[in-house]
Image (cartoon, rainbow, N blue to C red; front, top):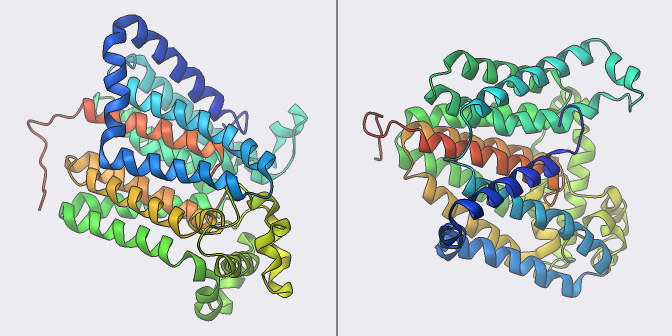
Length: 384
């Protein structure tokens, strides 16, 4: 992702295909239950219901071609991420985590060095000279660094684990991505709380944050315009905070205009041209043309309406319930991943983005591998 800004779907796709081929050759009879069993759980059913509603949303999309293009990028990457997370743990070669650590170290160092040199390498390569080209790589480092570091720590590669965390943070902090920095802060804080607090308290806190983020998304702009002081906008001028608040208000008005079904799956890129936008006051309509609401929770409401928001909330809460049963270290990293990803989703990017889906899939894969290496007989856990 650092060298090729949207490469993660291809990397995850190729990895998933390789593991699928290997598992098919090894024991094809065991492959079906391994892949199907999770889908029969309450969490699997909720996730499938959300995806089903997303497909149904094609029926009222005013731009079916756009909606199909969005899903044609998202669904294959989601399938590849699922295959990778189910099939790779337990079959990852011993050298791979250390190779991953080397990649993270080089990525963090490259981001920091090239930005410090005013993007000299990008100029030599003849590519786009803009500091935000490292935003997606920084967000990917947010996702994968901690799960990979846990794998390395449990494999007794302690120096590599610490280097992964340090250089991952360096890449994030040196980038200009406010979303990546927010994700790092939220993830680290949540991981620390989850490590020290009782399991139920940590999961309840994460659930409260996710629930409020989703429930309040349609009125986010109205809340911020009343509560956010001018001094905060001045400090966040590089993050275009005023514009983001205005965008949130515009999409919130669109949700109010059509709260039940939304505008249709994947319509954010042309939201200003949807029938829903025509029912929004003219002064609130202009910023509907920005391409997405800069808030995935709000995007779910705007595109999929109340049923989509409910199914998303159900899947998220069932996910947290599963995380509550993990041993302490895994739970801390997993909840840190949830908090970091949620913080990023609250201020950034398109929720259907394939590169983001691939990054989450890679992070979950490393986390599951860490679980396989867990010293369960000796690791202290506190399920209270």
